[in-house]
Amino acid sequence: MIGGYNNLEPSSRVFVMDCRVHTWHEAPSMLVAKKHPIMSVIDGKIYVVEKSKDRDFSKFIEFFDPETNIWEHVPSPSAKIYERHIDHCWSFKGNLCLLFRDKAVVYNSKENKWDVMLLSCDYDSCMMDNVIYTYSGGSFRMLNWYDCVERSWGDLKGMKKIPGLPKAYRGSLRLENCGGKIVLLWEENVCSICSMKEKMIWCAEVALERLNSQEIYGKI
Image (cartoon, rainbow, N blue to C red; front, side):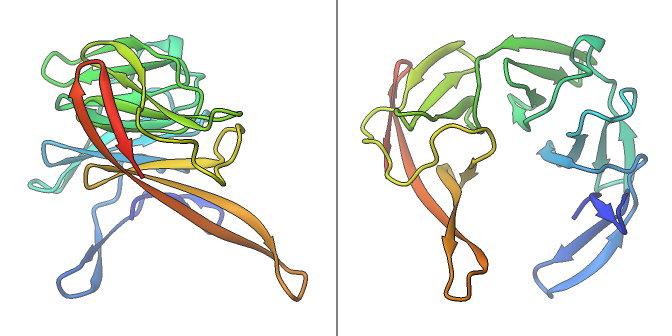
């Protein structure tokens, strides 16, 4: 459990739960407090990125090495993307990948540099095996994919329109990689007996099968 808000202030504190004995303990704090941290594990190190726009541009990425118990900063990408909203961070071919609405940037730790990949992602996404899966809202309500190696787009075949999915507004649906399957999560406002606002959380699990470089099938 890393960063976030503590008494309305951004926090740098880090807590770890040992699931074997069900106990929490505090780990070394981050170098910089983060309001909306997003994380990815790469080569055994935990990379943490500040998602919000009002971040310290020179220090908004750092990583923790559990072997040494030390936090270190990662050099920031170019100033051209500083004002952009970061959607996700992933491991891409063993490197840190930051996803924006129209592009992704990949940090090569060995060469200490950032590379840019042009995308067209308008909705929430997740990555598996170097393929980014995105949700297309509107009347289609389908899943699309982008192969970061081949740099090609495609539609996820074999799936009919999923009923109940939100139409189009950003952030209304979440995609997650769950053991090699896509899990879609979305909310629905429902009325309760006592007129209190309640939300029902829905999910759909999609199994994937890739036949070739141009065809990926999904099964709900």
